[in-house]
Length: 412
Image (cartoon, rainbow, N blue to C red; front, side, top):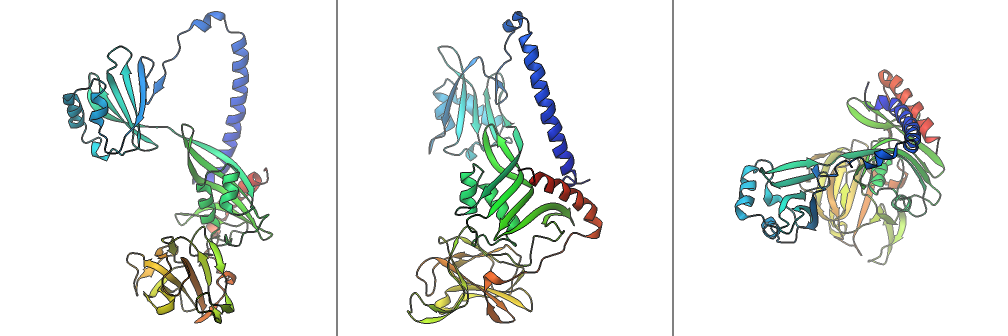
């Protein structure tokens, strides 16, 4: 059975674990009250920090200064140049000290005497990995990987201004907004959210110590947009994890709802709009998205680039033919993405260019246009066809996932 097929077992086990843990804690509490007073004199367990018994050391934290060197730090704490050189030579296959980054934290473990000689230096290379420089009997560098703690979370919120703000105000990690947008990108217009729209999500969040690394996995979610509730149920099909609605239809569509993330619409499709520069009324067959210069622009669907060129008032523009019926255009780009030129094929979500203000433009934005059978249509009203639904062979697994996720989402 796949990992996703075991979701129901996962949550049952979590519930049992919590129940057993609570019972165990109560029993421990009873045992503690009956403990003989002599137990209070038992020796404390050693305190481990980065796997080192830290009790007998003085700890000196710090961070790598710009243009700083480990030798400067270590020489000030009794380590010789010969020892530093030997450590680097002994462990050059373990860690290249040239990769030490300014601003990163370190901790010195120094003898608790008047000499205060450094015995270890722990360099925190990234959130999960540290390197321990040893200056005791062995002169070497060893990696230390911090334990990643996984927590299952149930979160919900109501939109006041945007999904991002709702999550931040609700104490959720910002990465969850990105994950949710990826799942519902084909079915929810995140530029058209209204006050009162809402969401629910069951997900796994990773932690190191007390620091969140963000949302790692979505077990199930719901989004209520314009009065319609859409449920996202995960299933591995054809070797790929996808999300499906309650009827087994894929949430992934032939076209994304929008070609860029976290922006705002400044002008809509119109047959008669006052041009902001020419000051005359003429059709505006697209949707303008305001965004900072350099914001990535994505192809909304698979297709072939039919042009990538500078065209007068449209500025730098990419046109994509998706099939014999649909094509799209992306105007006023600051530059094209690497490899984007006439004739190349792109996949849905590929970066094709970056927001700019080329051509006739009052400021940085993307003018996005959608064509059906060669005629412009309102991009915000296009109903994209879905991709393959749950197959007959997978319907049994899907129903199990669906029942578990729907039950969980109904609890909060």
